[in-house]
Length: 499
Ligand code: AMP
Ligand code: MG
Image (cartoon, rainbow, N blue to C red; front, side):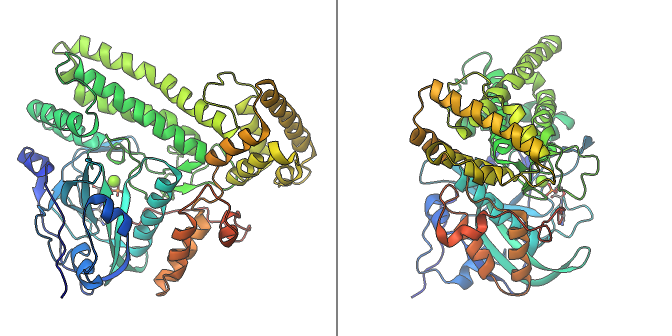
């Protein structure tokens, strides 16, 4: 006998004040087919899908059947998009089914993305094409395997319907799991509505849910909260930078309060290192270029400070002084997280505080030599043990790369000398480096290839890619191809939001 799906919803967000959201139900789709389901994540969330048919999962995670205990709603939020304030955004194509306490005791959201229109859809259709849904599935699971805080992928359901974008595309519903979907824009929304009481309720919800270590009886608990949010964002962006990840749309509605990476729209990992790299087709000014991400993080956090001011102090001048003091700490928070991460990439323990060998010089060499960022650090990881420099030097791809080669050789001399000076054994360095320099990342051309095949009905390329990304810090023979950068004709240089 088939059992029926039991999800242990407890729905804390739905108990918050009514202006925080609108109750909405998903719009049914024509022919839901379950294309992918994340059993391990379901187990982590505390429910069992054994004995549940794929058809039932497709019905539930395609939005055709509301599971027992769900309390579906669309969250309200505002946001600065490319620097411009948009007061009325909100979930225009996403519906929160509900939240629950997972098997680790953490509250998590389960949200359907592409589930039809809501009160916040404006001119949009509330739908998602298959391509962006797959990209999000791949990227967020890869980020999680890489050890970067991220929203997660629970399910992918194809709809059997077409969505109209630049072309007609197959549609999909993507199920996203997040520590919460509360963002900078959620605070902005309440402040723009003059809802001081609501801001306090939201901040208290966030304290309890994401920052339980902060003593809520302390006078300055909201300043502490703001500092902790800044700290998590600084650490998160440092992780992105050290992996060559470019988010692509760091609008304030796409920055979580929990510190998870969210909204994998036109994001991408770079192949060749370029500090000014931009992939997103809509980021014409390069606002969200690779090198701008740390500073944009601070800009977004300043936008978060504004709605929180009334929580910091009843005297506005005092409140601004407190916010500014925390924001001033951000560059150091970021620098130290980035430096620690970079040191580990080079085989030094976190406490190696000096800038020897110089990190920026290495990045400049990578840029001028047009060197693949990920492959460089992975090959470098073997060097302390093998003492063979050729695999690394061979990555220089510029014509007449002799001067770059000499410079890189000199840099390697300094680096190896420094390891010796710090009495770091070669195999110790190599081991640490291999844990911090992935062999496999979701390269853009691989993501594109998986999407193209699936649009033609073949999901095996997607399946394989997901498998290859499960153990990114291992060099497994069966996934060797996934380590390789694209051939020039394979390179994907533009990514799209697909909204
Ligand atoms: P995003 O680009 O996913 O961060 O979305 C920015 C805003 O546009 C959010 O308020 C979304 O809900 C809304 N949005 C994006 N795509 C659609 C769509 N197809 N239909 C309705 N709203 C959308
Ligand atoms: Mg968004």
